Length: 474
Ligand code: HEM
Image 1 (spheres, protein in one colour):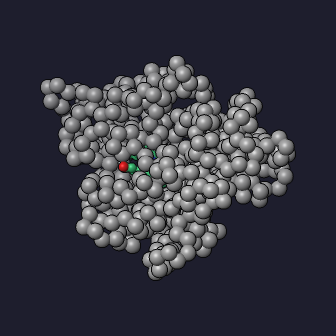
Image 2 (cartoon, helix red, strand yellow; image 1 turned 45 degrees about the vertical axis):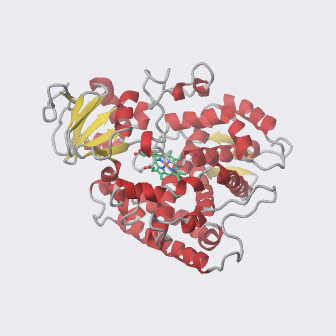
Image 3 (spheres, protein in one colour; image 1 turned 180 degrees about the vertical axis):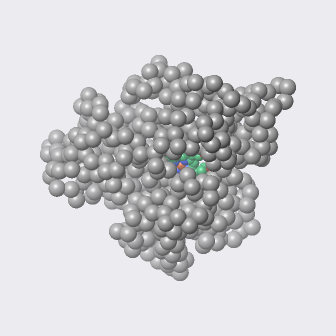
């Protein structure tokens, strides 16, 4: 099966088997990869094993799979396997010098540090209320029954949630109706072509750049307004909810209060870039995870009565949906986890090898792009029993398949594990807590993943038939 190898490794290492070249070695298996990267990588893994190499448009790729290989990738020294070098193509979205484009790994860490408390447990309770209010408002706009595009609806909901929780009420009020389109253009500007050359002048990139400029300008105005406001003058951050919960702060308030190591406020350009990066990282990914959760529940309606009983048991009508209640919704949690496993929003995670190294004894030459795929890894029968089956009980006592280190990697692992995991789970659970109570849903199509996008959702339109439930039953 193998037709060649990477440059020979040391005596202790073996080269990763190389996939056979078809017609144009430089192009590699591009057509199959472009059409359905998950199917291509799964098939290659079944034939060749858990590590293999192939060229893609002239770039050497080393693909590795399995908890032990993931551990080596996620825990690698960044001077050897660099996420920053792998994801620099995000710079046109995040901004120069922001996130993966920061000058050093330490600078990127320093940018992320102030965000962690903003996503911490004190704020999550307030965010949960914003989440519930936005989903309920969305459902209230629908007629009593009909058809909706579930992904488009959930995108609108997560855009509203992300802008309110992260940038604040003023920005949301000013930009609200325009944001879903602008975020969509930002997200559509990340393509395979962008990974290889982010500056080529294709129309999607021009739209991406215009959308970023419009969002950055509006965030700049929100920052100027907040900075110009005398201390104590009017509310800062999220509203104080009448339930008596402590008022939360949006992420903008947290970033404006943050100081650099030498005691200066963060420059506006950096604050803007971090906010755009956070929305980019968390909004569409959450909408896609919420959509796949819904698709799986429609395919497996036998779980819906049990999920509704869980709602009835844990949630009292009229009371707010706080984090404590959401955390206790165990069956719902396990269903979302199955969506993360079967349809992870990010299907390819990457690191650039800056030096020759080894992964699971395979030689990886400097310059190669190391790839890990949650979508492929989550279907390994060695890790998840009967992996293609939707089975929320796999996470229950006795099995706990998600506890295997680096097995479930929908949110990455190690030092760069997603900092928004708790926020994202809370959001998807809040969406389905409300939808399970308020609507019945029926599938209309087969919902195949659309691999032409960076975050594969069901192919558009993701049409779903719904009927609102009577308030007595919800
Ligand atoms: C369903 C929703 C989400 C998914 C599937 C997701 C997935 C991921 C994954 C896989 C990584 C690791 C990338 C790698 O190691 O190569 C990551 C990192 C990250 N995520 Fe998320 N994410 C989600 C939501 C969020 C949210 C809501 C936020 C913030 C508000 C966020 C912020 C970040 C940040 C800042 C990093 C980089 C961490 C670092 O490099 O140290 N994500 N995410």
